[in-house]
Image (tube, rainbow, N blue to C red; front, side, top):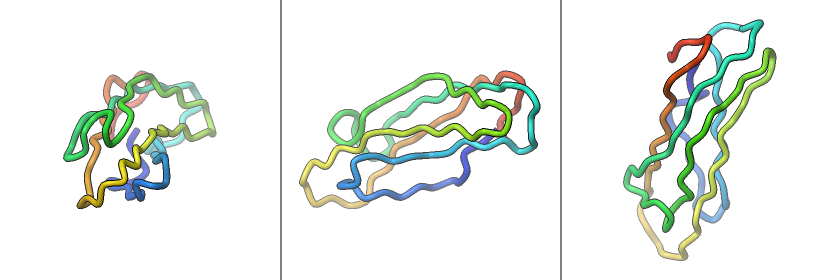
Amino acid sequence: MQFSGSNFVVNEYAGSATVTVTLNTASGTVVSVAYATSDGSAATDSDYTPASGILTLQPGRLPHVRRSIADDAINEISETVVLTLSGPVRATLG
């Protein structure tokens, strides 16, 4: 179980970013994983909406994490948000 890519780029004015979680091998059973955001160079609340929770992957479906991006109207360099997966159930992190 992993993110579909290692880096995702979104313009601040887009309003949100969507990140997909994939399985390394197909599963015939429901699997789940915890996720959480944390600050990289972007700041909680002023640059993005923090979140944590559990993603449940049904067989044959791909879940995703969608987070709000704050358009603060300040011309800034690129910023980062860290998204972490942990505690998989019936799967391993890859």
